[in-house]
Image 1 (cartoon, rainbow, N blue to C red):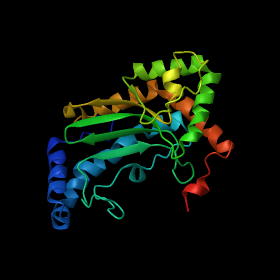
Image 2 (image 1 turned 45 degrees about the vertical axis):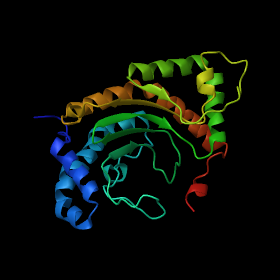
Image 3 (image 1 turned 180 degrees about the horizontal axis):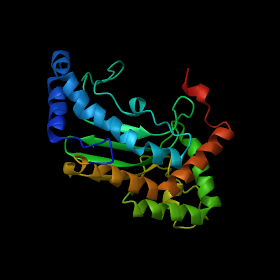
Image 4 (image 1 turned 90 degrees about the vertical axis):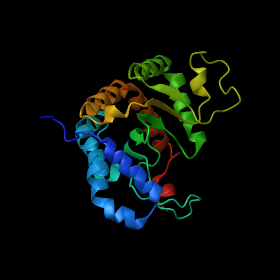
Length: 240
């Protein structure tokens, strides 16, 4: 018997999730609600249960509530251009409690009808605050490069959604410059082999990758705590 709660997300459950989105019907959802819960929502929550010990070890402020960590199958369409009510992709975040620690760096896991992925992300609503990451990179360049290498060893690829066009740090080490342009960044892994999420071995895979990438999470968390201490991020600004 597996040591984990998680026993896999089955192909038939993913197919039902896609059918639910295709029908986009409350009656179809209600008819299949329990199957979707047991086949999709419960296994996703079990991932959090199985990883909670590691996540708390990485950061003792990490929220490990499996209910709050997992996305809902139905969408809030208020103020959203898309009026489709149901999802065909699901995700979960491993992060600090967002009301107390808005925009904190986080690990994630997600899947789509044809792929799955996971990684480590640091996004901010105010890109200027991300310069605290730049400052820490310049202060501890070797530590940063070691953290980047750890992410590579975890199988992650560096990504940035938005960059400064101007070279903000012309005298910096060339090895650092790609990261010193960033207004946000992530280290991610994706695969089209969905058979790998249909087994408890997924937990071992996530544990290994998240633990190997721990130096980067620690680096991000230190930069984030600096932002909080300097008042660049204030929870009250996000909880009005």
